Image (cartoon, rainbow, N blue to C red):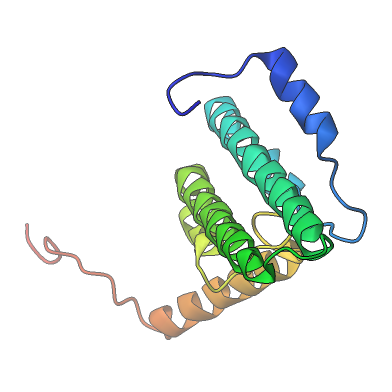
Length: 168
């Protein structure tokens, strides 16, 4: 299985077997915020969609492990210690999904203007959307911060470096 690709039919059948539980909305691939999605290059979108597909597989794996853990917990006489391995597997897969999100941000970063590349910082939390739920707040904060720093740097005099100033 690690060296071959599953057919689309088999994959679709397995997808249907593991629907996302209604009580856990975070088991879906992280979407790119519409504000960013509309502005990135088509090649970047295509690459991100491929990574979202990988993330979907990770999420389905987490759902399957959760179902397995539930079965083990409810099976009389079975060693409940086995469930720890299920939870460890879920933790590894969840960490893999987070790493994938950070990689997706880094791949989108070159498409963002320099001022807004800070949206890719680890300080911006990832939610159901890649750049957080409140991207407009972050954009506003970055814009305000940029204006303030420009005023501080300019400070009433022109401090730009001019190596040829005053030369004939």
